[in-house]
Length: 156
Image (cartoon, rainbow, N blue to C red):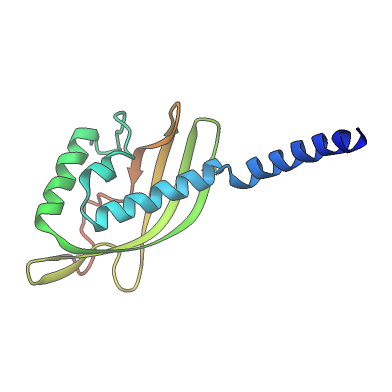
């Protein structure tokens, strides 16, 4: 009888500990989305990439979800051997909104030419990504610093 009284709280405590350890935080979910987007770009998987983008996407240049999808389709047709080097500088998470600051370099080939799309050999490009929380996942709603008006040095 006494064993049952001890076993029940221990089981509840262990259950809570398992949920705490195994249940991913919003920050970890966002890190995974950033990683998955990078892998989708490297493997030129447009569906994998766009699955992390909100239909409400709108950046400072007026680019929407459909524009972004079309742009990436063209990029994937023209470029190959895409390499991404990224580092997450900061993640700030509120209830339904999050921002991630990244430093990144993106190197790709077009035919025989190779060049940097973001950053250059000496410096990384600074990128800010905004997220919204939907009912069951985080989605990208805006990016800043990716579509620069002046291509970086080394760009073809």
